[in-house]
Each structure stands twice: as C-alpha cells, then as structure tokens.
Image (cartoon, rainbow, N blue to C red; front, side):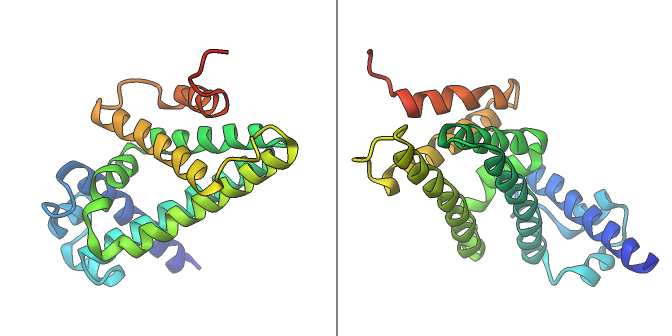
Length: 196
C-alpha cells in the first residue's frame, strides 16, 4: 500500500510538473530533463511511468479531464432547471481553468496543434457537447429554450464562446476573474443581443 501511494504521488508530481513545463515552454520545446528537474527526479525515473514525452502529455490530458468532467457532472447534477445546469456547467468550466492556469494554457495553446492527440481531444469535446445537449433538450422541454433551435448549432455556439473567453483570458495573462464571465455568457446565450 505504501509503495502504491508513493508511486501515485510521484506519478502525479511528474504530471503536474510536466503541465508547468509544457505551459511555460510549449510541448515541442519542452524536454524530459526540464520535466524531471521540475519534478525533482532523475530523467530515467520518468520512463518508469511514461513511454515518452507524448505519453506524458496524453496522460496529463486524460488525468486532468477526468477530474474536470467529474466536477462538471456534479455541477450539472446540482442544478434543477436547464438554466441552472447551464450556469453551473459554464461556471465550473471557467473555475477549473482559472484554478489551473497550466491546464488552461495547454488546452488553449498546445493541444490544438498536436496531431497525435486529436482523437483524445475529439472525445473530450464530445463529452462536453453531450452534457450541453442534455441541458438544451431539457430547456426545450421546460420551455426556457426555443424548440426551433438546432441543438447541434447551439451546443457548438456555447462551447465556442466558452473556449473563446478562456483563450482571451490566457492571452491577457490571466489578469482578471475568469469565473465572472460565466453569467454574462449564459445571459448572452439565453437573451441574445437583440433589444427587447
């Protein structure tokens, strides 16, 4: 048990160190030596846990998304109405990225350009879009979301808006409260820009 706990702690330390290094230098410029140094381990130790740098990134993304999606599912489940669920989802999404800037930088700046993990990113997007579909369909049943809207377009609009806000926050050096953008995003979606 103690050995397994130690392995888990070391594994997570390496993953978190890799996140910091990837965020600072970019995936292609980051080296195994930089990751090992940041983690406080020898270079060879990384190979006890990972095949190569690509595997580290793949496992980093898998680990982070599993945590984030568990929190997102809990946030959605805490809401009763579609609007509450949507607000909770977007607030949680922004909170998770704000609380882990390294993850935000990697997801917004790095993973889009790495072909080897595109299928993993596609799976992550699908999970998020499925959550949105359920919320939108509930809203249509409740009457809070118009029936004539194409669900596929609406969910991509929402995801694109959230990603755009995160990308702008990362580009601006994370100098403002990202979570404060949650309600304006939902209000924009629900009320549009048209003057009543």
